Structures are given as structure tokens and as C-alpha cells.
Length: 290
Length: 89
Image (cartoon, rainbow over all chains, first blue to last red):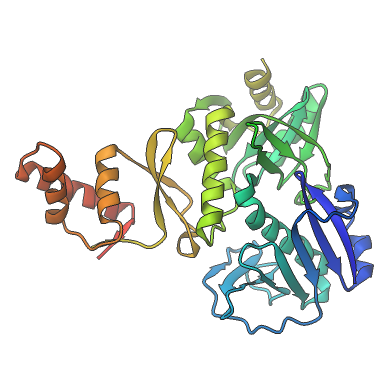
């Protein structure tokens, strides 16, 4: 068993693996590695066997083309997760977690998808554990410019990654921070920062960087380019579908609501209807950066 | 009828919104905004069975409104909540 420590959005987490050869293939985690810490928020360990019996799931999320995740609760009050790489594939990994998600054990069932399993277990546990601590995992592609960042939201297939690529091709001095799953953290002193994470979808972009969140832009496809500022309530609604949908208990839901409210009140939010062209990128850049 | 499990009334930037939470509402990815009267009624009946009549009673207790008008408004609100799939029989 070997434990490593990672700093994700300023919170230390530890991950222990039995199959230590897997570390080599977890290169997405490497930039986030930090020294051993006793002040960790999450301790996740791979085990060879989870003794608990799988309970009847409370929730099954199995959309076509997406990973399948089930969440249940054991008789002893622990959370019990199962996951698979796609909606119709057999379970690749099971996981149990303490009530506050701070300690967890997971068992890899299908060794062909070990890396998928570890990354998804960590993403899920991190989102649930840090929701009451001011963090939001946001489904977004994020571009940095002038020491601040813009998060582009939208359903899968809308063109988030295309839009941030158009920024990189047409706008000087900008850089991708993350292409799929950055972390927005609301700090106690009022700052709202966006952090790169070990999870970036299909684009390998794993940066341990934090910058202030300059704006949030929801994208929709359209036969024209048009951008519109959203008010606070609209901003909350615009963000809502792009943060983790798993709010299995009140503390998690309250944490997500508090963070979303703070972001909606403090960060300019826009709706961009756009074509996949350079003008769309220039329009969103000019609107946000002037 | 009753409010379905997993819907929570929250304050948001001075307004009232309903969000879907818990394991029951994982696919309810929208928020619904209520005015302060609707929020008062929601808060009053969130753990109980209710009818258009019982909502109308709550309205006439708190506001200066005729029973007839209160009943009309209550029925309209129930229709809207049904349409939004927030309540069940």
C-alpha cells in the first residue's frame, strides 16, 4: 500500500493504492502531488475486497453515453457507490464512504478500467466532501487571460472546448486552465477562485493554478453571435445544471446552494448564443475584458 | 395533495426559489422562482396534505382577500405547481 497526497483547490487529499503500478498511469494527478499532510479532508484507499453487501441503490444515474453511477446506503450508515464507464457496461468499481465522505475505500472490479475508476471515485468523493467547504466542481472549459479566468458552460456537445480553442487561436496571451472539470472555491474572505484539477475530460490539461473567476458564460449553439448579461437569479439558474447533480444529503445541498448564491451575486454571468467561429470568441473576450 | 419529496424552498439573492435535491431529484436540473405569497403557502404546507380550500384559508388568514378570490388564486397556484411537477395527489 502506498499513499500519496494531493493539493486540489487548496484542500489536501490522500489516495492509497494497492496496485502501485497504477501510479505511473495516473499522470493527471502528478502536478497536484504535495508533501504528506495530517490536515487532509479526504482519505481514499484502494482495497482488495469490500466486505459490505451492496444495498438497494437510492439513486441510479445512467444516461446513454455517460458513466453509470449508483448511490446507496448500507445498514451501518455508510455510503455505497458503484460505477461503470458507460450506462450499459458492468460495474467496474465499488466504493464505501463515511457519512461525511471524509474516508473511503474502493475496490476495482474490472482492471481494464482501473484509471477510469480511480479518477471517477476521486472526482465524486471530492465533490461531495468539499461541497460544505465552499467548493463546486463545475462542468466547464476554462480559459485564462490577464491573471483571471472565464468558465464556459454548456451541455456536452455544445462546443465549450471548441470555443476555448477559438480563444487560443484568435486572442493573444490566453491559456487553457482546464477543459472539463475545474473547481470553483468560495473562500471565507470573499474571494472566488477557479482552480485547475486532475480531471479535464479528453484534453490532458492538468494545471495546479488558481486565479480569480472573471466571468461565467453559458453557451448555446445559434446561427449568429449574441451575448447577454444575466441577472442574479438567472446566473444561479445558469450555473445550477453545470455543478455536480449529486446532492444526496442536506449538508451537500446547502453547501452547493451557498456557493452558487455567492458566485451568482459576485461573478458576472452571460449567455452567449454563438457560431463556432473566431467572431464568437472575440465577442465574448471583448464583453468580459473590454 | 402534497409536495413531492426532495423539493426545497431556498432564499436566493432576496428571492424565493425551489430547488430539487436529494436522491429523488437528481434529474430535476432547474429552479423555480416563487413570489412571497406562494413562498408563504409553500412553507405552510411543506409537510402536510393540502387542498385548494386549505390554501385559500391560509390566504384569508394572512391577507385581506375575499374567500372567493383566495380560492381562485389557490387553484391557479395548484395548477402551476402541478404543471411544474412539484406536487402529487
